[in-house]
Each structure stands twice: as structure tokens, then as C-alpha cells.
Length: 251
Image (cartoon, rainbow, N blue to C red; front, side):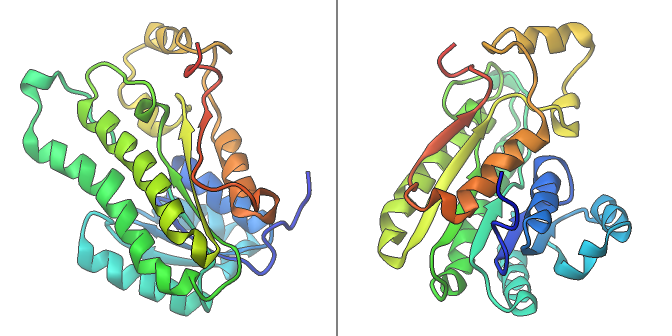
């Protein structure tokens, strides 16, 4: 695998404080990029970065992407401190497990505000900066649940399916500006977000059985795909929804 594929690139990552987003930050830095992280909680990432010289290549901005004013401020601050933007990774996301009869409508709104509206708002605010650079790239972290539904996750599935289609539409609209837009659709990945709804090992085995490869994904496996889509190696790829799920979509 080539290294330094993102040298001199300036990447904004939402949800970079944990899970897949944090791994994307780490891999972007290892590939030579400077990175701005937008997240509500940055404590864990700050501690990790303190152990690494890459902290000098990282801008941390505390932002709740479901709040429009914070998105506007955060993206502008990120772009100013990095000296521009030529890549965006939207990894911020929340889950909601609920039977439809009992679903709280405030929770429904929050899921869509973070997973869909917030992500697209970040894209819009970043657009003036992305247009100034050659071959800018947006990678939205959707979900396999946006391709094949999961029981008792109506809000989550709807938000991720919406993000997939919004990514495809943006790819059409922004192609003339030489901006590529793609969605990555992970299956079950072993993160804190995944484990918050797991009761015991039998639940994990049940989840694994949905996948042809019969295992959970690792954050590094998702981040590797994100790096590829950000890089010039993916120069002809736009409007794709790439399932990175160990075979659930076809299984």
C-alpha cells in the first residue's frame, strides 16, 4: 500500500473523537494530511494525540453538528486554521434502537439531525473551500443499514439511506467542480456505539450470522476505504455507495 497518499491535503473529519472517525483521523495523519476534527467530545482524542507528534497537524473544534450555528462556526474555523479544505469525512453519527410503537419523536428528529442534516450541512459549509482545490473529495460514512434494513431501527435506517442518496445527488451536482462524493456503508463494526446495544456474547453471535464472513468489522478496515476514496487513487470514483460489510448486502 502506498504511503503519504494525502500529503499536503487538508481534511475535515466530523465525529473524529471516537470509533471509526478517530481511526480516520489517525490514518489521515499517517498518510501525510493535516486534519481538523469536529466533535462534541474531544477528550479521548486529545489524550491520544498528546502521545503523538501528529498533534501539530491537528485542529480540534468542539461542535455539535446537529446545531446549525455551530456547524457554520466550526467549518469556518477548521478551514481558516488548516489554510483551506480539500477533503471532508462525515463520520459523526448516533443510533436509536426502538420499537416503532414506542419511538420518541424527539429522538427521531435528533437521529436525522445528526446523521443526515448535520452531515449535509457540513458539506454545504465546506463547499466554498473545496471548490478552491483540485480533486477535492467528500466521504460520507453511511451504513449497511441504509442498504438493507435492521429491525427496530427505523430512524437510523432512514437517516443512513437518506445520506446515501444525498451523497449520490451531490456527486452529480459537484462533478463539474471536480469534487467527488462517495458514501461508505459499514456493516457491524466493533465500536463503543455498537456495543452500547449489546447485552451479551449471544447477541454478538447473532449479529455475526448476518454476514457471509461471519465476523465484526474493525475500525481500521473502514478507515482504509475512506483513505482510498479521499486519495487520487479513487480519481474516477464518485456517486458510489460502497458496502464494507463482510458480505451482508449480498448474503
